[in-house]
Image 1: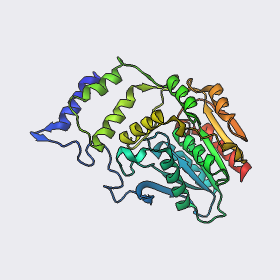
Image 2 (image 1 turned 180 degrees about the vertical axis):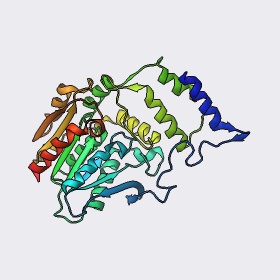
Image 3 (image 1 turned 90 degrees about the vertical axis):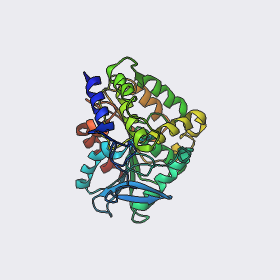
Image 4 (image 1 turned 30 degrees about the horizontal axis):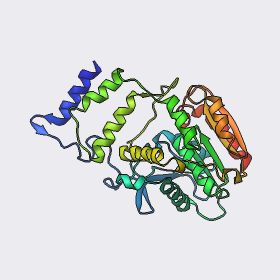
Length: 323
Protein backbone atom coordinates (compact mmCIF):
# COMPACT_ATOMS: atom_id res chain seq x y z
CA UNK A 1 0.00 0.00 0.00
CA UNK A 2 2.80 2.45 0.88
CA UNK A 3 4.43 1.79 -2.50
CA UNK A 4 1.21 2.79 -4.25
CA UNK A 5 0.86 5.97 -2.23
CA UNK A 6 4.52 6.90 -2.73
CA UNK A 7 4.33 6.33 -6.48
CA UNK A 8 1.27 8.62 -6.70
CA UNK A 9 3.12 11.32 -4.76
CA UNK A 10 6.15 11.03 -7.01
CA UNK A 11 4.04 11.18 -10.16
CA UNK A 12 2.19 14.23 -8.86
CA UNK A 13 5.52 15.94 -8.18
CA UNK A 14 6.76 15.29 -11.69
CA UNK A 15 3.57 15.89 -13.61
CA UNK A 16 0.43 17.75 -12.63
CA UNK A 17 -2.09 19.09 -15.14
CA UNK A 18 0.51 18.72 -17.85
CA UNK A 19 3.25 20.65 -15.98
CA UNK A 20 6.75 19.25 -15.42
CA UNK A 21 8.65 20.22 -12.27
CA UNK A 22 12.39 20.59 -11.86
CA UNK A 23 13.31 18.78 -8.64
CA UNK A 24 16.24 21.15 -8.13
CA UNK A 25 13.85 24.08 -7.64
CA UNK A 26 14.23 25.65 -4.18
CA UNK A 27 11.61 24.52 -1.69
CA UNK A 28 10.05 21.78 -3.83
CA UNK A 29 11.55 18.68 -2.21
CA UNK A 30 13.35 20.08 0.85
CA UNK A 31 13.34 23.34 2.83
CA UNK A 32 15.60 26.12 1.50
CA UNK A 33 18.94 26.75 3.19
CA UNK A 34 20.19 30.05 4.57
CA UNK A 35 21.54 30.80 1.09
CA UNK A 36 18.02 30.87 -0.37
CA UNK A 37 15.97 32.07 2.60
CA UNK A 38 17.21 35.32 4.11
CA UNK A 39 14.67 35.07 6.95
CA UNK A 40 16.55 32.16 8.54
CA UNK A 41 18.84 33.01 11.45
CA UNK A 42 22.45 32.64 10.29
CA UNK A 43 26.07 33.39 11.12
CA UNK A 44 29.17 33.43 8.91
CA UNK A 45 32.05 31.25 10.12
CA UNK A 46 35.27 30.67 8.15
CA UNK A 47 33.64 31.78 4.90
CA UNK A 48 30.59 29.52 5.26
CA UNK A 49 27.07 30.64 6.11
CA UNK A 50 25.61 28.53 8.91
CA UNK A 51 22.04 28.21 10.14
CA UNK A 52 22.35 29.18 13.80
CA UNK A 53 20.46 30.79 16.66
CA UNK A 54 20.83 31.40 20.37
CA UNK A 55 18.39 31.73 23.27
CA UNK A 56 18.65 33.41 26.64
CA UNK A 57 20.80 36.13 28.12
CA UNK A 58 24.11 36.38 26.27
CA UNK A 59 26.08 37.09 29.47
CA UNK A 60 25.01 33.81 31.12
CA UNK A 61 27.20 30.68 30.86
CA UNK A 62 27.18 29.50 27.25
CA UNK A 63 25.98 26.03 26.32
CA UNK A 64 26.80 25.27 22.70
CA UNK A 65 24.80 22.34 21.33
CA UNK A 66 26.42 20.18 18.62
CA UNK A 67 24.16 17.94 16.54
CA UNK A 68 24.88 14.50 15.11
CA UNK A 69 25.47 13.20 11.64
CA UNK A 70 27.57 14.29 9.91
CA UNK A 71 24.77 15.71 7.82
CA UNK A 72 21.93 16.04 10.35
CA UNK A 73 20.75 19.25 12.04
CA UNK A 74 19.90 20.67 15.44
CA UNK A 75 16.12 20.36 15.30
CA UNK A 76 16.21 17.21 17.44
CA UNK A 77 18.34 19.01 20.05
CA UNK A 78 15.96 21.89 20.76
CA UNK A 79 14.94 20.57 24.19
CA UNK A 80 18.18 22.14 25.44
CA UNK A 81 16.32 25.47 25.27
CA UNK A 82 14.79 24.49 28.63
CA UNK A 83 18.15 25.40 30.19
CA UNK A 84 17.48 29.07 29.43
CA UNK A 85 15.13 29.12 32.43
CA UNK A 86 18.07 27.93 34.53
CA UNK A 87 20.08 31.00 33.49
CA UNK A 88 22.11 29.55 30.62
CA UNK A 89 22.73 31.04 27.19
CA UNK A 90 21.98 28.19 24.74
CA UNK A 91 23.26 28.29 21.15
CA UNK A 92 22.72 25.92 18.24
CA UNK A 93 24.19 25.63 14.75
CA UNK A 94 23.85 23.37 11.73
CA UNK A 95 27.31 22.28 10.64
CA UNK A 96 28.59 23.06 7.13
CA UNK A 97 26.57 21.23 4.49
CA UNK A 98 24.07 20.07 7.12
CA UNK A 99 20.51 20.99 7.98
CA UNK A 100 19.73 24.46 6.67
CA UNK A 101 23.35 25.62 6.39
CA UNK A 102 25.17 26.40 3.16
CA UNK A 103 25.85 23.46 0.83
CA UNK A 104 29.41 22.92 -0.40
CA UNK A 105 31.23 20.56 -2.75
CA UNK A 106 32.54 17.26 -1.39
CA UNK A 107 36.09 18.64 -1.10
CA UNK A 108 34.93 20.91 1.75
CA UNK A 109 34.65 17.84 3.99
CA UNK A 110 38.12 16.50 3.29
CA UNK A 111 39.32 16.73 6.89
CA UNK A 112 37.98 16.46 10.42
CA UNK A 113 40.02 19.58 11.15
CA UNK A 114 37.57 21.62 9.09
CA UNK A 115 34.77 20.67 11.49
CA UNK A 116 36.97 21.41 14.51
CA UNK A 117 37.94 24.84 13.17
CA UNK A 118 34.29 25.58 12.45
CA UNK A 119 33.32 24.66 16.02
CA UNK A 120 36.06 26.95 17.33
CA UNK A 121 34.67 29.75 15.19
CA UNK A 122 31.13 29.25 16.51
CA UNK A 123 32.39 29.28 20.10
CA UNK A 124 34.25 32.53 19.44
CA UNK A 125 31.15 34.03 17.79
CA UNK A 126 28.85 33.41 20.77
CA UNK A 127 31.33 33.81 23.62
CA UNK A 128 30.97 37.34 24.94
CA UNK A 129 34.28 37.65 26.80
CA UNK A 130 37.20 35.51 27.95
CA UNK A 131 35.68 35.00 31.40
CA UNK A 132 32.39 33.57 30.17
CA UNK A 133 32.01 29.88 31.03
CA UNK A 134 31.46 27.54 28.07
CA UNK A 135 29.96 24.04 28.04
CA UNK A 136 29.77 21.85 24.94
CA UNK A 137 26.75 19.56 24.61
CA UNK A 138 27.19 17.03 21.81
CA UNK A 139 25.03 14.16 20.58
CA UNK A 140 26.37 11.17 18.58
CA UNK A 141 28.75 12.60 15.94
CA UNK A 142 28.38 15.94 17.74
CA UNK A 143 29.75 14.35 20.92
CA UNK A 144 32.67 13.00 18.91
CA UNK A 145 33.30 16.48 17.47
CA UNK A 146 33.20 18.05 20.94
CA UNK A 147 35.78 15.51 22.09
CA UNK A 148 37.94 16.19 19.03
CA UNK A 149 37.91 19.89 19.89
CA UNK A 150 38.84 19.25 23.54
CA UNK A 151 41.58 16.85 22.46
CA UNK A 152 43.24 19.81 20.72
CA UNK A 153 42.17 22.44 23.28
CA UNK A 154 42.02 20.70 26.69
CA UNK A 155 41.48 23.88 28.70
CA UNK A 156 39.22 25.77 26.30
CA UNK A 157 35.86 24.90 27.90
CA UNK A 158 34.49 24.42 31.40
CA UNK A 159 32.51 21.23 30.81
CA UNK A 160 31.15 18.73 28.32
CA UNK A 161 27.90 16.81 27.98
CA UNK A 162 28.29 13.78 25.71
CA UNK A 163 25.30 11.73 24.57
CA UNK A 164 26.29 8.41 22.94
CA UNK A 165 29.37 9.40 20.89
CA UNK A 166 30.06 6.67 18.34
CA UNK A 167 33.73 6.41 19.26
CA UNK A 168 36.87 8.40 19.91
CA UNK A 169 38.92 6.29 17.45
CA UNK A 170 38.02 4.78 14.10
CA UNK A 171 38.18 1.27 15.55
CA UNK A 172 35.63 2.14 18.25
CA UNK A 173 33.40 3.95 15.78
CA UNK A 174 33.53 1.17 13.19
CA UNK A 175 32.63 -1.43 15.81
CA UNK A 176 29.60 0.57 16.93
CA UNK A 177 28.42 1.21 13.37
CA UNK A 178 28.70 -2.47 12.49
CA UNK A 179 26.37 -3.30 15.39
CA UNK A 180 23.91 -0.45 14.95
CA UNK A 181 23.30 -0.32 11.20
CA UNK A 182 21.19 -3.19 9.94
CA UNK A 183 19.76 -2.36 6.53
CA UNK A 184 16.86 -4.66 5.71
CA UNK A 185 17.05 -5.12 1.95
CA UNK A 186 13.54 -6.53 1.56
CA UNK A 187 11.82 -4.37 4.13
CA UNK A 188 8.92 -2.28 2.76
CA UNK A 189 10.54 1.01 3.85
CA UNK A 190 13.63 0.13 1.82
CA UNK A 191 11.46 -0.78 -1.15
CA UNK A 192 9.75 2.60 -0.89
CA UNK A 193 13.09 4.38 -1.18
CA UNK A 194 14.25 2.34 -4.16
CA UNK A 195 10.90 2.62 -5.92
CA UNK A 196 10.78 6.42 -5.90
CA UNK A 197 14.20 6.55 -7.55
CA UNK A 198 12.43 5.78 -10.83
CA UNK A 199 10.63 9.11 -10.66
CA UNK A 200 12.99 11.51 -8.84
CA UNK A 201 16.43 11.81 -10.37
CA UNK A 202 19.22 14.37 -10.26
CA UNK A 203 22.56 15.14 -8.66
CA UNK A 204 21.82 18.62 -7.25
CA UNK A 205 21.85 19.18 -3.49
CA UNK A 206 18.06 19.46 -3.19
CA UNK A 207 17.43 16.11 -4.86
CA UNK A 208 20.29 14.33 -3.14
CA UNK A 209 19.23 15.60 0.28
CA UNK A 210 15.63 14.49 -0.30
CA UNK A 211 16.62 11.00 -1.40
CA UNK A 212 19.13 10.68 1.44
CA UNK A 213 16.40 11.41 4.00
CA UNK A 214 14.21 8.72 2.44
CA UNK A 215 17.05 6.21 2.52
CA UNK A 216 17.27 6.53 6.30
CA UNK A 217 13.84 4.91 6.55
CA UNK A 218 15.51 1.54 5.89
CA UNK A 219 18.37 2.11 8.31
CA UNK A 220 17.37 0.63 11.65
CA UNK A 221 19.33 0.57 14.90
CA UNK A 222 19.12 -2.56 17.02
CA UNK A 223 16.52 -2.23 19.77
CA UNK A 224 15.92 1.44 18.96
CA UNK A 225 13.27 2.55 16.47
CA UNK A 226 13.12 6.26 17.39
CA UNK A 227 13.40 8.56 14.39
CA UNK A 228 14.72 12.06 15.21
CA UNK A 229 13.08 15.28 14.07
CA UNK A 230 14.97 17.13 11.34
CA UNK A 231 14.67 19.93 8.84
CA UNK A 232 16.96 18.60 6.15
CA UNK A 233 19.82 16.11 5.83
CA UNK A 234 23.03 16.92 3.96
CA UNK A 235 23.73 14.04 1.57
CA UNK A 236 27.03 15.29 0.12
CA UNK A 237 28.30 16.21 3.59
CA UNK A 238 27.41 12.82 5.04
CA UNK A 239 28.77 10.72 2.21
CA UNK A 240 31.99 12.72 1.86
CA UNK A 241 32.62 12.62 5.61
CA UNK A 242 32.13 8.86 5.77
CA UNK A 243 34.53 8.40 2.85
CA UNK A 244 37.01 10.66 4.65
CA UNK A 245 37.10 8.48 7.74
CA UNK A 246 37.33 5.24 5.77
CA UNK A 247 40.17 6.54 3.60
CA UNK A 248 41.95 8.32 6.46
CA UNK A 249 41.08 6.51 9.70
CA UNK A 250 44.00 8.14 11.51
CA UNK A 251 42.05 11.44 11.46
CA UNK A 252 39.46 9.85 13.70
CA UNK A 253 41.55 9.59 16.86
CA UNK A 254 40.59 12.07 19.55
CA UNK A 255 42.42 10.47 22.46
CA UNK A 256 45.99 11.81 22.31
CA UNK A 257 45.56 14.70 24.75
CA UNK A 258 41.97 14.29 25.93
CA UNK A 259 43.05 13.38 29.47
CA UNK A 260 44.60 16.83 29.83
CA UNK A 261 41.03 18.08 30.28
CA UNK A 262 40.55 17.98 34.07
CA UNK A 263 36.94 19.12 34.38
CA UNK A 264 34.30 16.44 34.91
CA UNK A 265 32.52 15.26 31.75
CA UNK A 266 28.92 14.01 31.75
CA UNK A 267 28.67 10.91 29.51
CA UNK A 268 25.17 9.56 28.84
CA UNK A 269 24.13 6.35 27.12
CA UNK A 270 20.62 5.01 26.55
CA UNK A 271 18.79 2.02 27.92
CA UNK A 272 17.19 0.91 24.63
CA UNK A 273 20.00 1.21 22.08
CA UNK A 274 21.23 -2.38 22.27
CA UNK A 275 24.08 -1.67 19.83
CA UNK A 276 25.61 0.78 22.32
CA UNK A 277 25.15 -0.45 25.87
CA UNK A 278 27.13 -0.04 29.05
CA UNK A 279 30.15 -1.97 27.74
CA UNK A 280 30.73 0.36 24.80
CA UNK A 281 30.09 3.41 27.00
CA UNK A 282 32.65 2.21 29.55
CA UNK A 283 35.19 1.55 26.79
CA UNK A 284 34.93 5.13 25.55
CA UNK A 285 34.76 6.62 29.03
CA UNK A 286 38.08 4.97 29.88
CA UNK A 287 39.78 7.49 27.57
CA UNK A 288 38.56 10.38 29.73
CA UNK A 289 40.21 11.55 32.93
CA UNK A 290 37.19 12.67 34.93
CA UNK A 291 33.83 11.32 33.81
CA UNK A 292 30.36 10.72 35.18
CA UNK A 293 28.76 7.83 33.30
CA UNK A 294 24.95 7.62 33.39
CA UNK A 295 22.29 5.49 31.72
CA UNK A 296 19.18 7.31 30.51
CA UNK A 297 16.14 5.11 30.94
CA UNK A 298 13.23 4.56 28.55
CA UNK A 299 14.90 5.94 25.43
CA UNK A 300 17.23 4.97 22.62
CA UNK A 301 20.02 6.79 20.82
CA UNK A 302 18.07 10.06 20.43
CA UNK A 303 18.56 10.98 24.10
CA UNK A 304 18.19 14.80 23.80
CA UNK A 305 14.83 14.44 22.04
CA UNK A 306 13.07 11.34 23.35
CA UNK A 307 14.88 10.91 26.67
CA UNK A 308 14.79 14.55 27.73
CA UNK A 309 12.46 14.11 30.73
CA UNK A 310 15.01 11.80 32.36
CA UNK A 311 18.11 13.51 30.90
CA UNK A 312 17.24 17.09 31.87
CA UNK A 313 17.50 16.66 35.69
CA UNK A 314 20.85 14.90 35.28
CA UNK A 315 22.16 17.70 33.05
CA UNK A 316 21.02 20.35 35.55
CA UNK A 317 22.66 18.56 38.45
CA UNK A 318 25.90 18.23 36.47
CA UNK A 319 25.94 21.92 35.53
CA UNK A 320 25.22 22.95 39.13
CA UNK A 321 28.18 20.85 40.25
CA UNK A 322 30.81 22.12 37.80
CA UNK A 323 29.92 25.81 37.54
